[in-house]
Image (cartoon, rainbow, N blue to C red; front, side, top):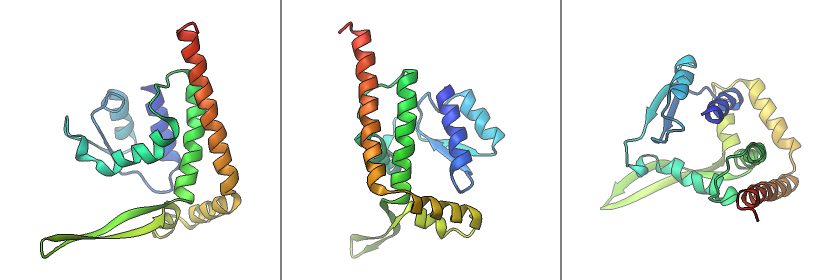
Length: 180
């Protein structure tokens, strides 16, 4: 619960747009008094998916694979050492995906002669933020500067090294718990 609260505070502080709404599944990491209090204090509307309806947020669920599972797998990370490495890894992944990786966004969905026609926009998250008129120009300039200072190859190498460090931390915990 403490880690979730800390992560939410970090998200609200670091993303360049105002958080107006938080939508979660029904996991206990989100459905609790701490998150409710956080949302109330920050004037964030909190909504949740219907129980046992895992397809209520399919876009977010799809990101669980590309943004999380592809890098960290399915292990349970629950030690302080793992948290530190995981926090570092997720920050690196976020930088890579938000500044460099294009994402498809559904623009329209029309039915024509019984067939559904979808139109997508392909762009990076950074470019989408730069197009939002409500984002301050100082924030936009800071993001552009950040993008120009990062070497994608070094970033990718750092992600690989950090992924290995996470695996080593998990293996160390596993050996300790199983007396291997």
